[in-house]
Length: 467
Image 1 (spheres, rainbow, N blue to C red):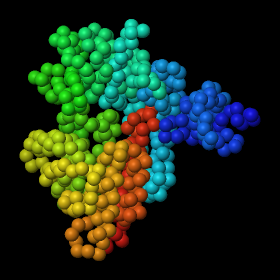
Image 2 (image 1 turned 90 degrees about the vertical axis):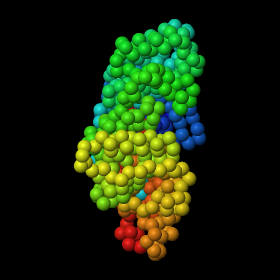
Image 3 (image 1 turned 45 degrees about the vertical axis):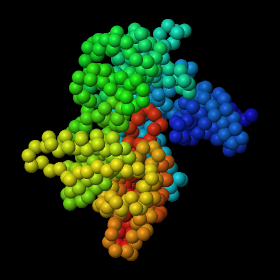
């Protein structure tokens, strides 16, 4: 074995934040814990014919972007928390890696290149995670209860005393929560606590497999009295069973979008963005890029509770929020009515409506039912919006040269939590539906993780819009 094979020169990072190197024979080696432009040694623990996987064992030449992790539970050692993968890389460099992941996915998967790269949206690197699912485990051998994330590549719960990516007040609760669960009669039957922070209230949803005793419920109430920001919710079965510990308690869980004068109430098991700091900027940028005029009609696909719909309604003539769940549509409608009723006299608010539709089974015929719109905003889950953009491409092709029955949107802003499905959908929009990708960029929604949140703008080409 040559010296070159004994040490590895790290060229880049993959989507899992593993360093990528090549041996002299061209074989790819993935090294956990290594960073680009480092020369390292690795313990190889998995070998295939054309690649190997190893763990960093020694750094011979460190990257200038390497930093001391901010969490004592981060690392490659046994028992380390698996919640973050990139704490050893400077936050600005993390963003650069994610931007490259987005550009590579757009080009290699979708054969699309953005005309303009948007400046990344960045926010606090710590204390940003306002939503989390914390596992709970009574460890008899240690004589303790653990509350936190899982260990790296393990089903075991990490022994966490703090978590710097959680809000400071929640991180400070971890040890108290461990003591609380240890005091419960239901110590063996409470597998998780779901966390959802609003602007003023921290909801803790206790999953319990058996009914809680009156004594245990009182222990939860005492905990909430000691920590006034905490509101307890219970989940005896599936997500639909989530309810307040005390039903008479006010539901005051909400987040604000102050630029638009909007407050969004939500339940702890609703989907809301993990990072409220980034969400406020995300909503602002998406709507600014959409360039909505007062006389325009806008469709908000995958609208959820109205995170984009309500801000759009302060600008457009007519806004329609479309979601796959009847329950979500009703909740979004309630949020809209509540907001419009509280507006001061003379304040402007668009005609706003909500529609329930299976967005993973869209067809040109269904798309016609929603009528033409000047602009679209698309914010799908990780699966992307393939059926929707495919229906758009097919319907656009059908309408070429025909009477003005339906027309495609002039601009689409697509918010994505998966660069691979964004690239797949971008290929359809650009190569079949007649759009160009005007701009694209990332938002660092999840600092210190490999998760890539992004946004892309698609404009209808002049030749297609005149057809």
